[in-house]
Image 1 (cartoon, rainbow, N blue to C red):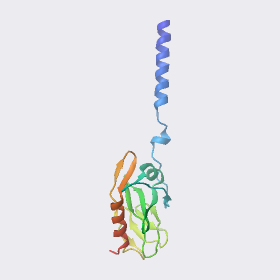
Image 2 (image 1 turned 45 degrees about the horizontal axis):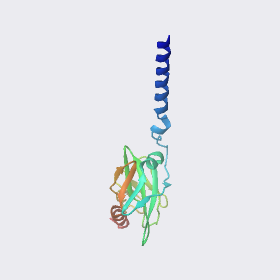
Image 3 (image 1 turned 60 degrees about the vertical axis):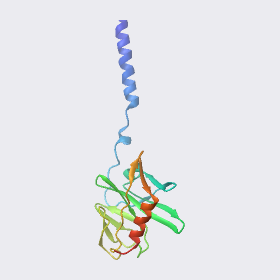
Image 4 (image 1 turned 90 degrees about the vertical axis):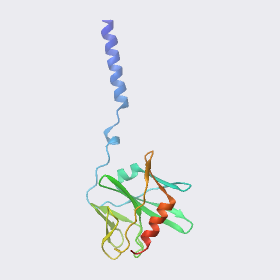
Length: 165
């Protein structure tokens, strides 16, 4: 009888431990892709010396975000979005129309001001007034749940985007 009580107590304790360690489905499951056009959400980038980072979770949860990087000559804006199984980071500016916002619809980036369209995968212009200003990609690494980029890479992508080509 005592042996059954001990076994029962041990089993009950194990069940409690497993339940306490389980991650709720809403935390471990990525947000489902919204239908239709996805407007970007502004987020804050963390700047530490020459390193800029944003949380991967912000991109995965919102599918399309943008952020600013302050410089001596003014703000530079960037976007990060989820397309397929990859996250892309690009300069977020449309020089002719002066827009700093892009929505994402399927495989297309859409300028929020002039409606010029760009390929989400490549940043190349498809159709519209500002098609000659492709969105340059920023290289990054994922470190401790953050998308980590250098100020130099961000600046180079921004400069490449504001030049026609």
